[in-house]
Image 1 (cartoon, rainbow, N blue to C red):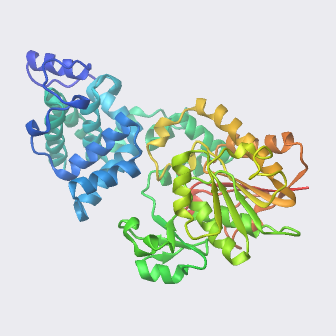
Image 2 (image 1 turned 135 degrees about the horizontal axis):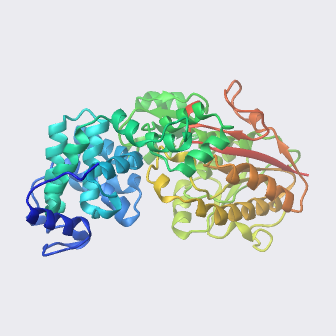
Image 3 (image 1 turned 30 degrees about the vertical axis):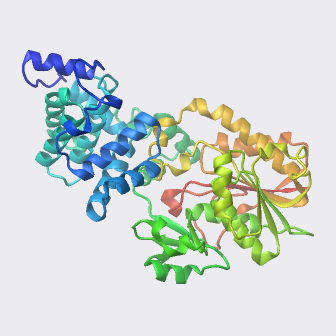
Length: 491
C-alpha cells in the first residue's frame, strides 16, 4: 500500500522532518510539545487520554496510576472521565493491532513516526475501529490533537486517519493477519493484539487448545470489573454489596463486584473494612489458611507482601484464628504500602529480603506454620488490568524472574516447620513460572515436601480447575486474573 498524499511538497518536507524525529524550527517544551499557551483547544477527555498514553510510553508509567491523577488535575468526571478511561485503556490494549494498521495506512513503520503524533494516531485509530464515534468526529478531533502536540504533522495525520477510516476492523485484520490455518499464533496475535510469545505461552498453558486460547485473548481485551474484598471480622460481603450498590462475588466469600465508579472514594475502604483485590487473589490467599496442618497454627508468614492486599486479607483472617502474620517486603516504598494496608491487624512488617530465611533472626528456619509466596512474576495473568504490560514484558525477562521465584520458594520451604504448608502463587499462567518453578524448587530445596491437592481448598463446585494438584485460574473461565496456586506440605 502506498503512503497517503497530503499537501504540497513543502508540507511533505515539514511532515517528514516531524515523523523522522527532527525538531526543525518548532518552539516546543519538554517532550517535543509546543508551549501550553500556544496549543489549540482540544476536547478535554481526548486530551486526558493522550496525556495518559503518552506517560505510559514516554515515562514507563502505569495507566492505572497515571490516568486518575490526570483526571483529577483536569477535573474530569462523569461521561468525560469515562470516555477518557475507555480511550486510554482501549488504545493500550489494542496497540499491537492498531500499530499494524497504522503501519499499513502510513506506508511506514510506526517506529518511524515521532512519539507525539504516533500516540495521537493510535487514539484516533482506536476511535475509528473500536468505538461508535463517527468517523468525521474521530478524524477531526484527532487532527486537532495533533495540531496541539505536533503541529508539523497535522497533514500527515489527517491523511493516515482517512486511510484507516476507509476500512472496518475486520477488513483490516483480514488483510494484515496471516491465515489462521497457516499461522494460528500470528493470526491470533494480530487479531487480538497480544505479542506472539504471549499467545504461545497461553496456548501451551491451555494444552494447545487454540479455541480456548482465542476466548482467553478476547477476555483479556475486555474491561475487567472492580473486585472488592470485604475484610473478615470487619465487613460482610453481602452487606458491603448492598452498601456500595454491587453484587457478592461468585466464588470468594469475601468478594464484591463493583459496577463502576472510583473505589478509592468508598467509605468502606477509607475505614479499613474493605480493599480492592481481584477475586482470584482472594481465593489463593484464603487457600493457604484452609490447608490442614497438625499442631500449632499461630505463626503465619507472607514472604513477598507488597503492596499488601493478600497481607491485609491474611491479617484479618489471623485475628479470628488467634494467629499473627509476619509480612516481608524487600522494597522500602512497598513495605510502607504493606504497613498501611495492615494497620490495626496482628501483622509485623519487615523491610527485608525474603531469601534471608535462616540468616535473619526474624525469619528463623522452621519458624512458621503457614507461608505464602506471592512471587514476583511477569504479570501475564493480569493483562486485563495492566494492558501496557503485554508490550513491556519480553521472553528475556523470564530467566531472572524464575531464578528469583525458585530462590523465594526454597526459602519458604525452609521457613515452614515440618507439617506446615507453603502456598506458591503467581499472577501468570506461563508454565516456566508455574509448574517448572515449583517442581525445580521442590527438588532442589533439600527438604521433603508433598503436594496438597489445591482444588480441595477452593469453593466446592468451582468449575475448570483441572486435574490437580495445582490450580490455574483464568479470566475466561472464572472471571478472575490468571492466578496459579500450588500448595506444598513440608515433611
